[in-house]
Image 1 (cartoon, helix red, strand yellow):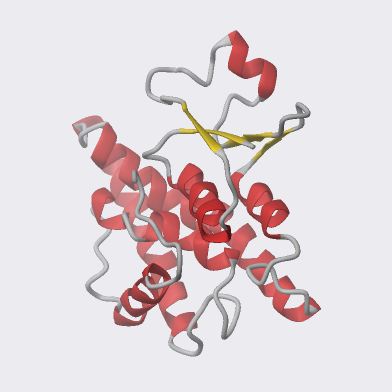
Image 2 (tube, helix red, strand yellow; image 1 turned 90 degrees about the vertical axis):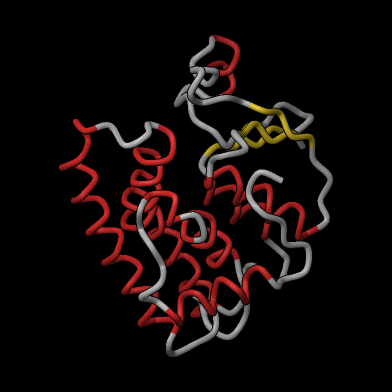
Length: 199
């Protein structure tokens, strides 16, 4: 397998982390999003959406979308539960991550960490940060009742949400008010095969 990705992207990090934790061999193909390397004709031939991560098999099959990749790669492993209700909880958090969490936490990080917090983005950033804190409060309340996002065991739902949560302070979204969330981050970081973003 080849994984086309940007090492500083949380969405790409999810895929890298899962493959490492499962011990699956893969080739990492670096793609710099800020340099528009996802917009080249060569890349667009692989993924017309022009986005990373992208998983490419030796037979030419291509699978984009980070959470679709997580679900496919984790099939048949303990990281994607077989029991229907628990699996539905994994789906729930994967969908929520892309709809409520990533668009606020990740975009705040992009504005602060990569765009260097330009003044013309100040109003937009404040709104994003407020919504990011709403998402983190929801996660915290949930994690006060159980150790992992989908229940008692670590799953791809935790991988998906860990990716941008653990770097949220880079977007000015600080985690001090959320002790249960910080405890969860530590539990995820303690999982076998864990690696940090950018490693």
